[in-house]
Picture (tube, rainbow, N blue to C red):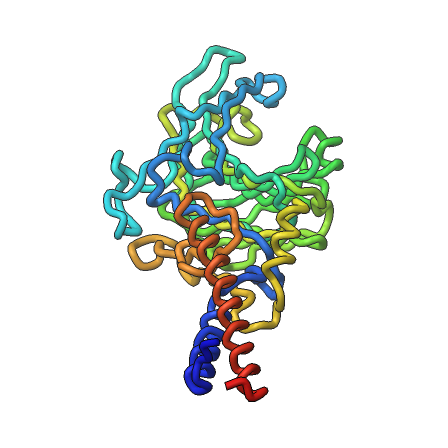
Length: 375
């Protein structure tokens, strides 16, 4: 039997143990001391084709004017979801390959449909529908073109929905509001008017959301929903909190309703998204089992990772280069991040850890053999 000399054995055992604990975030990601087990992160600034991103599903549907509660209906189509990546993979700001702001462009097409006709719009939703509580952030620049609603929201059904909505008809030189809404059974009874339900607030932003990119965020827990803009808390709602799993959605639409979206826009209106980041817990039993298997000790060094907070609006090559765990080599093992490269990194990480554990066991057994006098 070959026996590794004791000093060498101790050295390599220590080295391998250090390497073993260097795989970060196995137990999840934290915001405001709350732990989330799963993540979805998408860098739209460098995404060349939305249909190849397995995290997202562009929506194709039609809603009649009667169901849309407006003079016009809505027609969501892939044609209105346009990837406009930066010209260089090394840049984080500037014009896209099609001109204009880089990112995922969500179009509401301009013009006047026939009465009762459909207004072309854009919407993308997460493929995963098991998002149950979490912290969700979107870097967006909304349109200045009058007559649309830009929406960043979580959705299970019409009575369990978390909305951040921007009505371009409300923007003027001195006021740029965001509408914060929790749809509930009470709002359904009121014809989906949440104004008098205690779950509707309008906040005037200290910036023009159509003049640059900003991060909008909501943190959803069993007891509250907290809304943020550029890391600053806007509001906390504690009534009608959703308790079912659902999807995160980015949408840009108009129905011509003068009491909400207004419009339709005269010319094409564009909402542009730089990124979407979601850190959440899953209702999927298989994903819960995955977490239990990979998270052996949540108190171990680097077993959980703090989600970085932005300190300024994501504009320009410095501030727009926000942090992605999924772009790091060892922070998304066993996650369902879109793209085979990221998934293979996670698989390779788990496999290499298994090999290292086996090697450590061999070395420890060798030491034990030596200690018992088997030289």
